Image 1: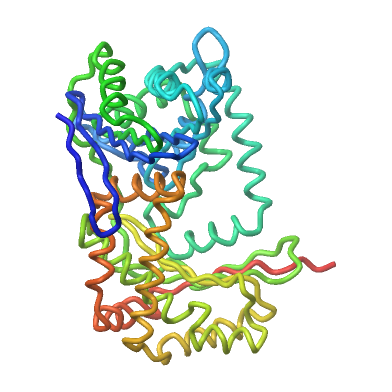
Image 2: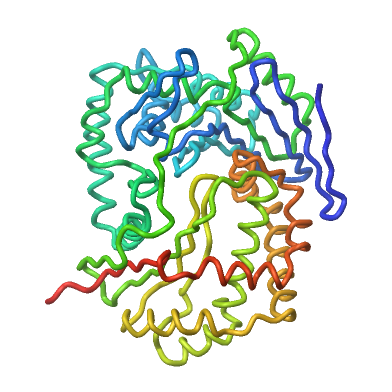
Length: 428
């Protein structure tokens, strides 16, 4: 039975249902939109390299980078060709991406929406792995990994995660390493696919000028013949992680014109889901706007001193099992910037006026999401997989108090939870 959910405050509605297989289908109507955007996503990311077998409940451990490898392999079809060709023939463009906690396949099109949905559902639900095509893919992904190793911004972030985390797999690059992917077998891929790509662990989201009931009926007619039985939740296994960081400071020299700097704070409180997790993320996001946003006193001081430029950022990210803040950018003097930040972040005033301004900006950006189908889909799926209803967002923003912000600063910005990553220019 289809369910219509509305948020009168922002004038939005969605139609959704859960099929007998457990697949969640969500349609967000966009009358007048030229393009339709669709995602088929699974709650399976790079950190999920140990998990309970759904049938035997034994713990299975797989090579690092396998979620990303599996995403690559899904497009290849038995008998030749790939799904990209099928989308192209129908006038659609397609892509996919893997992050720490999810894998997403997508297309956007101006026509043949139902036919493109069939392609999306069918190729993701028709895995084809052989020794030959897996070994071929290893060479392709090796090149991708080596490319990432040569990207200063990527190395900056990767080194920060390795510094912040001792055991948690979020410290491992999403693509894994050259050594880890070389050990991946077709059997590994099928094991992970059968565990995490079950419909009950997935969501199909369609955004565009479509009839929601027709879309849901079309998806149901595609899924019923496939005979999926409902499967319970997948239980991933994560190692114990101390609240303190693994390494206080890490540096690397690369071809850059100016040093790159990022300072991170590890979140010591994890395990949150749903509204509690949403409140945490919004509180920390508002805190960073107030402390380091472009209108803040600290940002203006650092900018005038030439320690940062207008690309300086400060943000919080995470999920149920991990969380961290990262702030940084280009700087001529990483040591001075670190010292000024450590001092300034704890001394900067936090006022109700600043909080109200940050809230208005946050709500404006959130409302703007609904005019960008791609960004909306990313946000919707990310929240969904963490047990968060997107319609709770604005209400949660409104209920964050100045005391919440002050408490966040006093608990999060602790020296034992802080690490720094720096990329310095190579000597000529």
